[in-house]
Structure formats: C-alpha cells, structure tokens
Image (cartoon, rainbow, N blue to C red; front, side):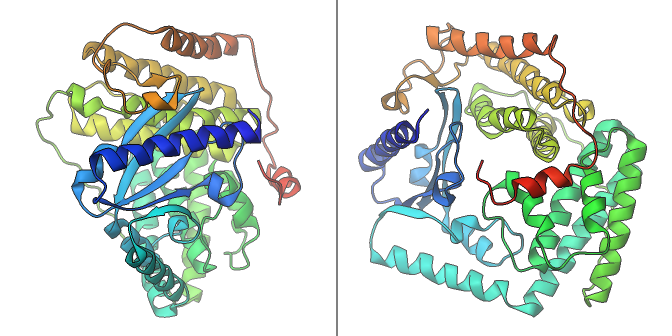
Length: 410
C-alpha cells in the first residue's frame, strides 16, 4: 500500500468516526486526534490508525469499535480526561498522547486549553526530582514483585510472565531515570535504551539477555543479574528501595462468558499483536516477538481469570531462536479464540469498506462472507507454510543489529 493509499484509507475511517459522533453523541466528545505511528511519522504499510477520542461522559462509549480491514486490525476506543490526568503524573513513560497528537476536532477552545495545561503539568513533573524519586521507588517495588513471582512460580509460563513484567517495569525505570518517554512505540524501546545516558553497570548486556532466555534457568540467571545491578544503581541515586514479595491469588466462582463479553476481543487481539509478531519474525526482532507474546498472554489470562473458559498458554512456547514459530503460536491461539465466537454464534467484524465500520446488521450471524473466508484461509496458510520454513537467527549479540538500524524508520 502506497503512502497516498494509506492516507486515503485513514481519511475514510476518520470521516466515518466523525459522522458517528455527530449522529449519536456530539456533545459527549471533547477531542478527536491522531496518535501513534501516524503522528510520530514511524508508520509502515501495516500500521493501524490510532484514533484518540476524549469523552466527557459515558454516552460516547458506543463510538468504540474493533474491526479488521485490509489485513489490518483497528481498535477505536474512547478515553476519559482521567486517563490524561494520570499520564500527566509521569508514573510511567507511556505518555505519548500528551506529547504528540495531531488534533483534528475539538468541541471548543476550552478543550484545547485543558489539554495544553495537562501537557504543561507533564513537562513539570518530568523535571520534578522529588516526584521522580517517588515514582522510581514505586516502579522498583513492582520489579521486586516480578522477581518474587519468578521465585515462587512453578511453571514455565509463570516464569516467562514474571520475566515479561520484569522487563517492562525495568524499562520504565530507565526511561524515568533519563526523563524520557516512549516516543515511537514499543518496537523502538531497545534503540532508545542503548542511547540512554543514565544506566546501571553492564545494563545493556543484561537487558538483551532477558528476552533471549530459552528456559527457566536462563530466566533466573538473567533476572538476578539485572535485578542486582538495578537495585545497586538506584541505591547510589538515593532512591528509596521498596521490596514487595507478596503473591496474591484470588479464587471465586467464575461466570460463563457471554457473547457481549467477547465483543471486539478477537479483533483487538489481531489489531494489537498479529502484525507486530509478523513484523518481528520478518525483521529478526526478538524483543518485539517476546513482548508481543507476553502482552497477548496477559489478554488471555485476564479472560481466563474472569470467566469459566479454557486456558490458552502461548508464552511458555516462546522460542528466542525461531520467531516464525512464535508468530504461528499466536495465529493458532487466534483460532482457539475464534471457537468461542463460534460457540456464541458471534461474527468477527471483517469489513471491506470504512462505511461498514458502524454497520452491525450481521454481528450475530454464523456464516462466513467471502471476505472472512479469505481472511481465515490466509491464517491457515501462515501456519501451514511454517512446517517447511525454518528461520535461523543469530543468537548473540543482536545489539549490533540495533546499532546499525539506529535512526532508521521502519
């Protein structure tokens, strides 16, 4: 898809969203903007459109929509001002929506003023050393909890999930220590990290070992080395060390999942992880492959925790030396999730035209359209191809590859 075609597609989607707002809740939406890769300039032909919709009441929630079009998943949802107030506190580096948005609609000038005030709060907080120390202390308590979870875990899945959470919270500490934010999305985090000025001793080598772990022993060794160096570094920076070791489990009678509970879940999974995992194996990006599997596992675990459904375990099958296999593991999990849709006679929202985004006539039909048949045939083909395709990946070091890619857009 050419750049011109990408922008034409995006404009059509945006127009449908704006028309839906005008028809159903014109007074409930304060702002509509473009975020993500199309705001930062780091898009590629499979980038989805990140539409940021700030609501002032819950009437606007019906704008939310997940769908698949042109093999790309889209996840349109609304956020409250409370979400942006939280971002302004700079408790983690995921504050891009307060740093870079292309605003395309605002209800009035007061909305712009409110948004700019939150931007100013964020900038002040990023340079507030006392607040930063408190936020870093809280983040390290999460790191210590992740490390404790590793020690108390009994399965390979639990080890990998502890590792995934550990990596994310450790990265958050590094960003805050350097007063930075994640400007270009998850894919560029390793590039950001190697360019940070403030880093614990031997951090880079330890960091890349984390997502190259092939078994529980490697996970334990890599996490222990990183944890010790990070703890020592924070002590030297006069950061209060908070240790959390509790491991909370809740037991309750779980309800059966309903058709309403499933709405948008397949589409959201596809939108968030399918093309990331495909990009990862095509570009030998071990970091993105692991992080995507972990985050998809969190999605499945949330539903398994909340509802009486079978567990889907993908992260324990992670292979740092075969990223194509990781992609196929995820594709197979999508097919398992599709069975829940089938059980509830629920239709996945696969569309050909932006005008169909808010057309819900066939939501609960069970037949497959030609577009859907093509879509699932392609999923089948991806997995079948993997039987004969083996991708050899150089295990160490991947740091040099990242250095070569420094400054290049995806």
